Amino acid sequence: MSDRRARLPAWVPAVWLAVLVAALLVPAGPAAASHPNPSSQRHLHNMHFATAGSGAGTYDEQFCVESRDTSKVSHAAARSFVNQTLTQMGSGRVWDGLGEWRIDLWPTDSHCSSYPAATRNSIEIEVHYAWDWSGRCGGPANYYNCVVHDSPVWNATHGHYDSRWAYVYLVFSSGGRLDNTGRAFINHEFGHVFGLTDDNGVCNPPSLMHSTIVGYGCGNWTNWYPSPSDFQSVRNLMG
Image 1: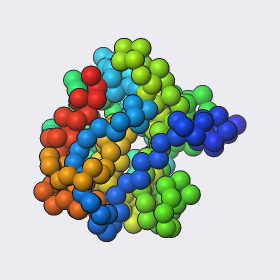
Image 2: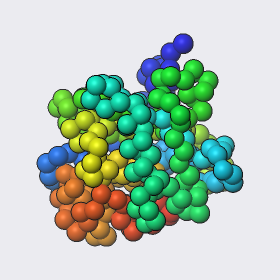
Image 3: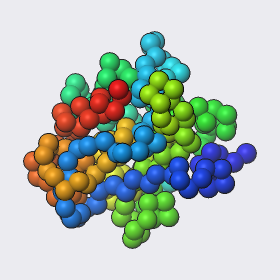
Image 4: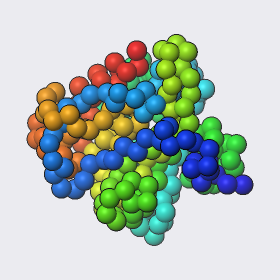
């Protein structure tokens, strides 16, 4: 049975497909301030809600991680690094727990393609490591990281469509590195997962979304983790 990503072009109209091209390893022109993407379909549905409990619940954000070259980075090493970056680096440095746990991130036990379609369809976020994602992200080979949002879901509480799934594509040369540069790109891409965009030509407030550490032009936030304004921007989107 084919997985949901392979079916994407056949059953998701192009108007719903949002490819958020991420930062480069070189400066990317005019800088940007942290601000929400104008399309609600470019953030996850579940980030508006919380589920109580000690495991992945209905409205939590579960993620799987997969490497396309396990001789470079194994599935387990990639999953451990992403999980550590998103959930274990301390208060004020992780997306996990934001908005009174409306963002509640849970890693799966195995890599994405190990699951049957029905199980895989219940996983909100997929993270994929490879040498090149130009077929997904555009641009030259081995260069761009990006996020693709998929499958609109009606949000009756807020009166708009959100995305059900998000796919994070990381190249080994930048977002796929297992160091603080890799952490910066992961957090940048998850900013896209949660509704932030890159560039509006302004460096204030400070933001990882336009930082020099991920190849953009603003040097007033050079940490690998999201800035306070990034966190606040996502809280604002939660409503």
